[in-house]
Length: 410
Ligand SMILES: [Zn+2]
Ligand SMILES: [Zn+2]
Image 1 (cartoon, protein in one colour):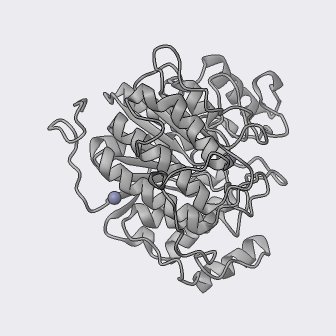
Image 2 (cartoon, rainbow, N blue to C red; image 1 turned 90 degrees about the vertical axis):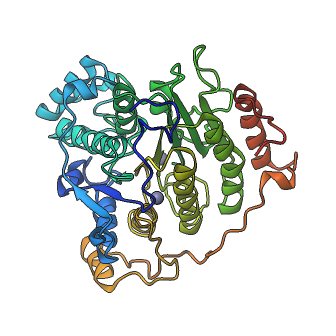
């Protein structure tokens, strides 16, 4: 299980047919901060409903499996015991514990909060286990990706940090190198913090610059602790960054670092809030740009980590127009059967959207940008361009730690 070579005899073989384990049951929609909160679980309900309408969950290579809530020992791989106790207390009494971020406007206390949060963590761990043992090549938990939760505090709508707990589980079970790529519009600060000084985990986050967006961290000079130089990677993009520039930044940073690090497992966080319509942030991606990024991460999982890939959801606050389509594309991609972007959204799903939200559903799976043309770093860079400046700052900060040339390597 701990072979250094991802293709070695002790590692599960890549089977090449994209077996996908989907971690889902209705209870995951119980992670609900209540009316008026931006992170409404209708977004995951509508995602699963759309995926079902496309028949994705009925495919022979897709299994929808049960899972248990994470117990205290699992949660304790990342979270401090007094914090877990406080979440349980708040979830049982409804009383805030503001010192630990519980009961703020971002993280209102709700009854059953511990159980709902531990269930999401358990789903991500079940995904990690399926991928690590070879039961499934890929796994996806669209209700997960709660990347802001800290060891001892709730933050940014996140109670327990399911991606960090899943990664910690992998390390406990013999993984020696795990890469985490976070494409949420916000910095993946909680996951970065959990492994900041751990050379076994590389965290890469592409996000809107902390100068204009929560949580105020994720600058390129955050590169890892003294025992793990270059293990934290941050691409801080200017407001207004769209598909082509975002994908150019992705290509200039993510593939070369993943190839250099050679992870045994790839864990990805797919917050859909970099979309232009998202109400909480200022990047302007389309569903087509997002879909392109998912396809690249899928390709990279096969290239660098023997196909072992755990994908999670994350942020995303345009509940109807964006999140369900973005993550249905993600599930389809992970199942090895991408959906034609020109496909119409099924009538049944549009009816459900009307019923559940009184909104008019999007009619197609595209935003109209079927092919995103990306100019790669190879073709040169423009020192006056703010996206290129951001990319170069990141490359300068971490590439030398991995034996890569910040100016030329791709
Ligand atoms: Zn695959
Ligand atoms: Zn976010």
